[in-house]
Length: 210
Length: 333
Image (cartoon, rainbow over all chains, first blue to last red; front, side, top):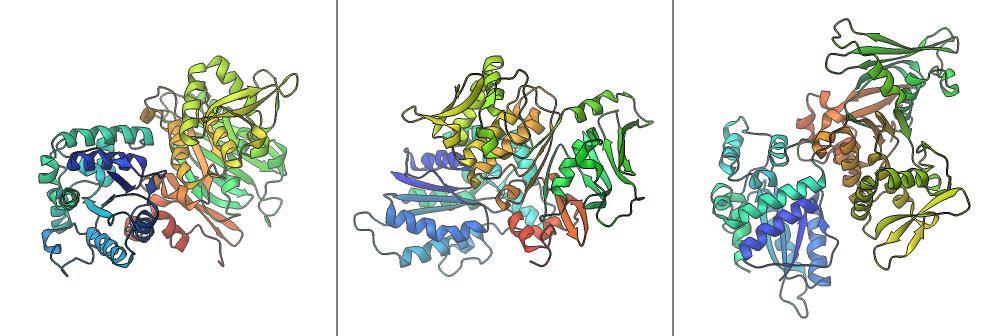
C-alpha cells in the first residue's frame, strides 16, 4: 500500500512509519517524494490542504498519515467524536475538519479510490509516546491531569533528554532512538493503546479501517 | 569558555554586554552590531590590528576610552580579559585571574583566544584553486579548502571518510570529494556525482553546495579552533539543510552529545534566517537578540525574558521574532 507520511523531521517520519505499519500489519510503500515535512503547529494546518490536494490529484498515494504533538492544547477525547461535537481547541478535531473540507471539495480520482486519511495526536509529544513503557511516569493521563490541575508532570525538554540521552541530539541520533523505541512498541501495541489511547486510538482506528 | 563580553564605545556597541553560551546564535537587524560582536573575539586577541585602531563609536569624543572586557569562566578557573584603545593606540590584552581561582591557569584563555577563528564563507573563495603550502589553514572566507581537505584525506583518512558520508547526507547527489591539479603546485576540488560518477569541478558547483562543504570541513577538522565565529552559516542553503547545519555546529559545541571525546568548541553564529532560528526554539538560552535604538546597539539573551513561554505559546519562534515583540527587527519597518 502506498502511504504518504507528513512529519516534522525524517526521524518523526521513520517512527510514524514503523507504528503505522504495525497497526496495518503490513509494510507500506513510500510515495515518490523527498519526504513531506511540516514545521509544527500551527503551520501544519496551513499546509495540510495543499498536501492533501497534491496527493489526491498528482500521486498514486492510497493513504495519508499525520500525527501532531498536542503540547499544551486540550487532548482529544471520545466526547469529540460524535457529529458536530468536535472541540474547537483540540488539534485532532481541527485537522479532521480541514481534511474533511478538502475531501468534500476535490474531484474524484479517475482511476483510484479516494485518499484514505489517518490522523493522530501525540500527547504531549511524539517523544512521550515513544517513552511509553520505558518511563512509568510518562503517560497521557499524567499529562492530562497536569493540564487540569497542574503542575505539569514533565516538560518537553525533559522528554527529549530521556529519549535521546542528550539535550542536543543530532538528527542521526534522533532517528536511531526513535526507530528503536517505535520498533519496541510495534512488537506489542497494547501499552500504547492503554497509556496513550486518546491520541493514538484515533490513528489506530483509522488505519484499521483501511 | 568566554561567558560574556562587555563593550564600551566599540563601534556600534557603545555600552552593552554580549552574553555567551557554548553555542550562541545572534539575531537582529542589519547594523545592530552582530558582526562587530564577532570581530570582538579577534580584537581581544590582537587589539593592535589595523581594523580595530579606529574602532571608537561614531560621535564619541577622542578622549573617550574604547574597551572590551571578556569574562572567561570554567570550573575553578575564572578570569577577566581586557583590551583598551586610548588615543588610537591599543593596550592589552590583559588577563586578570579571579582571586577565587583554584587552577590559576591563564594559559587556557590565552590559548582559546589564540585559536579563535572567524568565518564569513564565500562560494567563490571556497572554489578557488589553492597553492600547495604546508600547514595552510582554512581562510575566513573559506579559501584554501582544497588543500585543507587534501591534508585531511592524507592525515586523518577516517575523518575524511566521515566527511564524505555527511556530504552524501547533506547533498545526496554527491558521494565523494575528489582532488584535481589544475596547474603544477595547485589543488582544487571536485565532487563526484552519486549517479554516474561524474566529476563536477568546484567552479561549477552551486553556491550552497560550496558553503555546505566548507561548513562540513570546519565541523570535521581534526583539531578544531577553540572558538568559532560564523557569519550567517545558513547563507545560500536550502531550509531543509539547516537542521544538518545546526547539528554540525552542535557537534562542535557539544562533543559529548555526539559521543566524542574532545574539548568543546565555543561557537558564536549570526543569522537572519527564520527557519534557522526556529531550530533553536528549545534552547532560548542560546539565542541573543541584537537591538538597535538610534546609534546604540544592545544585546539580550532571549531566555532572560520572563514572559517568553507565555508570549510564544504555540507560535513558531521565527514568527514571533518577525512580529517584533521580541525585538531584534529593523526600526521603521
